[in-house]
Amino acid sequence: MWFVFTLLTTFLWGAADLFYKKGARGGEEKYSHLLTGITVGLVMGAQAIFMLLFTDVGYNPINILIYLPVSLFYIISMVVGYLGLKYLELSISSPVQNSSGAIVCILCLIFLGQKLDLLSASAVIVITAGIVLLGWIERAKPSEIKPEDKKYSKSVFALIFPLIYCVLDAMGTFFDAFYLDDIEATPLVGVTEENFENVANISYELTFLIAAILMLIYILVIKRDKIEIPKQGNKLAAAVFETAGQYFYVYAMSGNAVVAAPTIAAYCVVSALLAGIFLKEKLKPLQYVAIAAVIVGIILLGVSEGLAEA
Image (cartoon, rainbow, N blue to C red):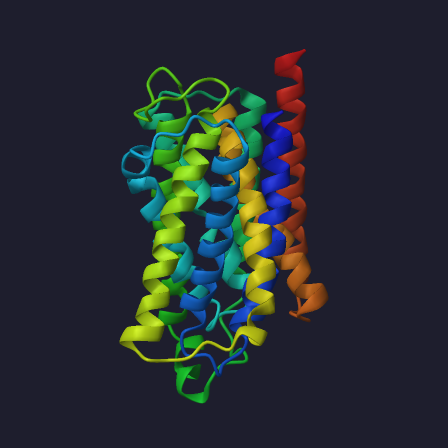
């Protein structure tokens, strides 16, 4: 089932990217990246509280602190990614960000001692190559941003944001593999086979909720800015897709992290396709080649998993 969870995460996060970009297109919002982070944190926090109230998770609050390194890597990388969407097209920023899967795969092989069979290794290489190719085919071009920000869209600074996201997300995913790969070795407290993934997910979501409250205080109290609730619809949709994807993500990573990580990174393919359809971001022929390569890689992973379970 981990492979099914991997694909669900991939498609849900690809859809979330579409709404992240739509939410970032409102150039009149100075703190749109923080507002997106607040919305995601509130939705994730609500989901975590629902789990605590209506399911028998058996959660120990100390796990918030134990899981904090993973949570912080993810939260910071995501807010940086939201900021980057103001300066780059989604079809460019998403693939660059998600080349983190290659970094994760290498870290898992080196430090966790995980191994790949030949078919899976070939699939990971194809997926990674497709992601990297997709991210570097085009040069950054002006988006619907403020005039004073247009200098970033044609300079190296435009790529700094997705590259920072890439590194931070890779570290978060690697540590996630460490926490979720083996229930006997995990530092999480009070986990069982039944609640293992939910404990990690709730810890992350509660941390994001705390971060959302801090960002909310920063905007309303420190900066004395206002939030226009009716304009947050796209951010809310993104948060719902993000939270749903996060729910399946921990199950995917606990199954086979070395394969799941680069596959989930392929959600940029979904992002690129949706950006072309709904945001009218034009894709070049070579981009479609890269997308096809990633899809082939995912199919190969599915075949490999089927053979392994046969």
